[in-house]
Each structure stands twice: as structure tokens, then as C-alpha cells.
Length: 187
Image 1 (cartoon, rainbow, N blue to C red):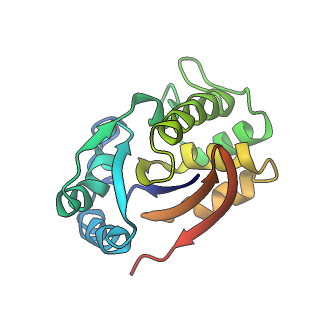
Image 2 (image 1 turned 90 degrees about the vertical axis):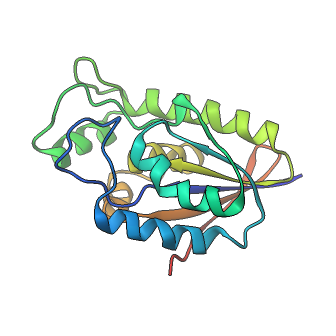
């Protein structure tokens, strides 16, 4: 059975808020969430899941309201826990992509992020066989998921999407076997 999973990377957040869990969308991000709604309305989505982080939920909230669907938060779809504020995010990210087990004290490695996100994804697929669902996500979490299915996806690929907010990819599965990934245009 074919299952379509629309991963929706959150819109632009308010970077002045350092707390990852409660960081809201910027004014631009709020406006862009309406564009996400337009991009998803014709996709026959029957369920919406999300990271518990405010910016991920707020990016798909307008779509959920318009589609008459509830957002089911799944803790394992959360973004990577860095452990401490990082001034040089690019250098930190490079270290993590070079060594999937590298992490700061109190933080997570990309391998850990990938493992919990993939486990949650497979649960969603098993519970929604043959349907289309949306998942509110984050840049690093989404990149770790892509890397699971395409190990050639690495740091340069991650960095090429770091500023794409919002960003939607459709993963098409036959059972839990990935068939394709397609970028969805956001107008």
C-alpha cells in the first residue's frame, strides 16, 4: 500500500528566543504558514503529526484548522537537543555530520536523532497505511531522516536546506520501503 508522508519543516522562527521548545514563528513565519496551508490543501491528508516544539506546531496549525484535523504531537519528532547554546553553528554541524556519534554534554548525536525520528516515522506509516499524512518537523531532524534512506545525504546537503523555511518534502512509501522523495512547491 502506498503511503505519502508530507514532512513540513517549520517556517521562519523568532531567533531572538533561545528556548528551543517555545521559540515562536517570526511575523514572516506566521505569514508563510498560510502558504503551507495552500500547498497542502489538495493532498488528501487524513492525519497531522508534529514535533512538540511551538514553531513546528504553529507552521501547520492553520492547515489543521482548515482541514478540520487535530495535530497529534509526537515527542520523538522533536529537533536535536544541542545541549548548550552554540555560537558557531556551522562548525558544530560539520562536526556532527563528520561523526554521527558526536554530541555535546547534555546533547544528542545525529545518530540518536535519526533513530528516534525513524522509529516514530515507521509507527506513523504502520498506523496510516495507504493514506497521506503531514508531519511538522525541523531541519536537522528532517536531514537525519533523509540520510537514513540516502546515506550520501550529508553536511553539504543539510547546509543547502538550512535556510529553507518553510520547506515541504513528500516521501512516498510502499509499506515502509521508500520509493521517492519530492519537493512540494510553496507558493
